[in-house]
Image (cartoon, rainbow, N blue to C red; front, side, top):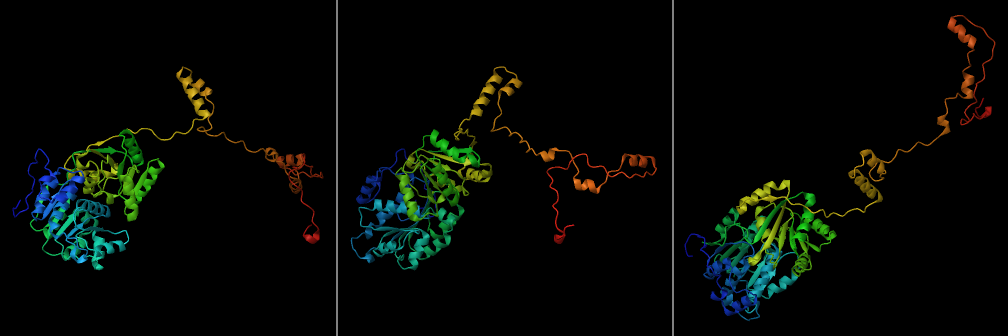
Length: 511
């Protein structure tokens, strides 16, 4: 463990898990651990705690849900007990340990664990993150705290306001460092680490190791030991991973069906966008499921209330973005659903790490569409195993429209056809349906004027005198005929539907 190069502390695990009582920890810490219900250590705790107690820098790689928080909290509290005092002066309680977390939820989770393990000591702790009023945080920091848990953005606010002084920090923990780099916190991390003393112990814990993380470790960690309890980027063996080929329109039906057939009481449904989380939560509410949304546009108070309701069992589904994939410790969560395949393959490891924690079994379901081929390939390369995408037969649970009388007539016609009646008889037995058949053509309105043959009016008959028959005959023979007969009167009266012109006086323009 004292080699100058960073070896991997990955010795074969003992048959029986080591007990916390075998560690050189203060009785006050062991009492708090026992009251928390823990007797034996997880592999990451058994390997990391002795190294941290020796004062070495550590790079810890472990699956989510394996106890990384206790792996760095307990040895740091043990080493800070030498500074324990009951003084009320803030000057006697400077910040000596700084824990940086990428999200508010993870920071709050770590703060609760620190307070739980340090409750029988005189060490003080506080947590600061954005999204809430900064005034209560200022008052708490002015009283003095030894352990400060923070998100990078809010910590920089306190540094600029002179409410957080970090010149006496001895221990630094970068929790989920890869996520901080993904979010874009690298410039903030560099600024914060620039305020710290050069001589310090630095611990870096994460479920995944990327080349960027290794470069960060080489810049800020001094001769670190790499502690691995599983292959990097591996998923927990207690989580059953299923991949189903579905269409976008069927995703909600798949979730409802699996909740029903698997008898799942609760689940987290992960999506890729904040807008998608809000819309999907409303849709599940309309389906009759108690649902809450958890995303970055929610205020911190709303997010904490949603998490508390989910942990109490008052909410069946928690629709969340990747903001909830890091550090959430929900006991006995039976399942998670990847409603959207994550853009970043490492987020898949963190998402499914919300279930199957502390050795319990869990189910992780990923809904795959034809557009997700690239992301699935990246997940395969990351976890190192081939992914089998299965088809899923959906139950037809869509609401049915009420049966009409015409539907009953259709059924009778079908029965008669099956009983041997000819097609013509079956067709005759089926009355016309007003729902599927085309409506009959409407007869045009009857108008007697348009039904009559053409009849010239009196005015047109006077303008065009009739040619006598003798004249017609003469024209046909090519000879001239002279007659004095008057034009014949029309054989039919004018149409009664045409009104005669009114006589108008000459003064008004008439003739």
